[in-house]
Amino acid sequence: MKIATFNINGIKARIGALTDWLDEAQPDVALLQEIKSVDEAFPREHFEERGWQVETHGQKSFNGVAILSKLPLEDVTRSLPGDDEDEQARWIEATVMGESHAVRLCGLYLPNGNPVPGPKYDYKLAWMKRLEARARDLLASEMPAVMAGDYNVIPQAEDAAKPEAWTEDALYLPETRAAFRRILNLGFTEAFRARTQGPGHYSFWDYQAGAWQRNNGIRIDHLLLTPQAADLMTDVQIDRDIRGRDKPSDHVPVWIDLAA
Image (cartoon, rainbow, N blue to C red; front, side, top):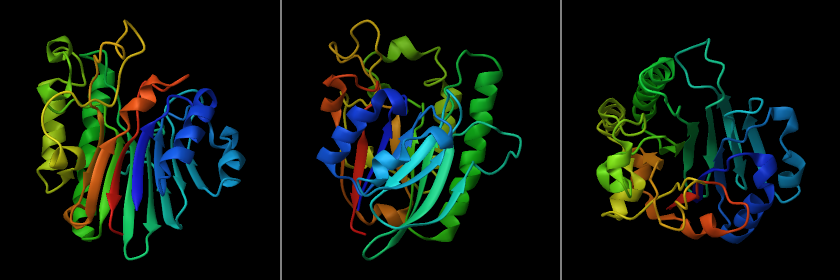
């Protein structure tokens, strides 16, 4: 079961690039972030005609998450529990039925949090506290589960080409990284770092100042696995070269293979 996360930075702007990558990479499930579309305007027919089941949780012009799956999906839910007044579309869940295992998939778009200090950073930290609570429930279920998406968290210095440039940024502040570690330390495996160590591995390059050409990137797209999912993992990769294509997102896909 190949599961990918991809912040596409606008479904309308990126439908061609996304379709090309889907045809080439052939994931079984793609968790998308920043679709920037209400549910009714998402081009679902385009994907359904290609064999994808489509589930969305959209919002006009901002945020928005979606699941594209070639495998059956069950029990789809939307919105991160813990705040009934939160109107931002940042969370979608479903159970995907593999050949040998059912896997609970959570697609997320964690708040950016800038500028700091301020209400946006307060919202980010509060959202991460809710995420921690949901993570605890996933662990308690004892089923294979994956929380994947754009976390807007640079976990450690080696995850940025120029960490010194991020010291005052919400993505790299000590409180942000501590909140991320608290979730990991519950018993999750951060898929990419479980297989690949060292600097130079990024999933985001800004559109400005030649960041891609100079490889001035950061790694902020992560897949966190419960122990039951980690036991099934056979591969994990970043599709780095996608960033150099026509009309790219500023993020690239990150994917895992599970023996499920």
